[in-house]
Image (cartoon, rainbow, N blue to C red; front, top):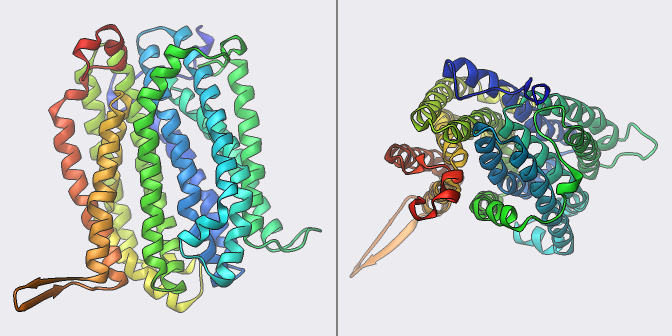
Length: 475
């Protein structure tokens, strides 16, 4: 097994910060490349027109829904694989790989079929109309075919990450993202015999690159030379393991769905103000997603570190991993937020030359910039909970951030409120689309404070392997 351990990062010994950086930087690069998929799509779609940008902006939360579901379905595998590795049981970790693959592929195929069947209703729900509807339909029809392949690739990333190998997935992301970038202008603008495909071309480029990534990922897992192995003899239902994956995974899956539906709800609120705010919001969110990919990657690294240390029975070290990851991420994002505030117009003009879209988007970035670090800090703390197997807590924090704080604040601040008190009529707010921007920032601060306090309680310190042995003491 020595060869299979060569690329692993062991978070149970040595200085934490250097190992955290070693584990996190390939994840940061990989997540940035995942974001580059979306930025490249938006860049080339922006050359088609504002309606095309609005169409892809409307569909971004939907496409992110399936990415979030894939991350949710594989979150349980990170906890189990990392804790088995920390405990020195590689064979049990391999079985988790097979069961995760089996479960995820079945769910991916079902979701793809369901989404394609109800694609028209979805577009109506998010408020797509006229030319935007037509272009969004062409985009989403192809997108649904990519779902099973997207899910397969996320299985590959998650199980290798749980084993402590983050570099292999990064290199595959480099190849996949490069393929997407090359194909985008060819398919979107028509530099091929197929002619210009517009928004549908962006979806086809993404489909091709994800099929490639999934195929190579499965090959890597079957070889078993990169830290973890997919064994064909394990590809039959192991019901106790599947039950454990489902028990740990369903909160993360609900979490992913809730986050994405909240994004759909937000974009629907923005769409009520017209195509210009919708396009500005779509571009702004994509730029924010760069910071999310950094904090999400560090959160994933923290999850691996927490899982390995709980498997090795060193919970104090697991706590130290999370706190150091949180502070480091917030410092980086504080600087990024400052740049966002200082040069918002420059950033917007990279993706669109429409003056109205640039003006609205620049204001969005100025509102979000000072609070960017709170978004990132919460994501790292959630990663710590997920590594411990406390996926329900991570889910609760997402619900708090989005459905309890952000969406109600958005409605209140954007559309105002009225209250009848006897003969008096009280009213306030109604900031219009700016109220939607402020709801993002204020909800981030509130959820971060709750997350810090919750993690400090320490109820997560008993890992999932201990729970299997002593269910009466489970958290």
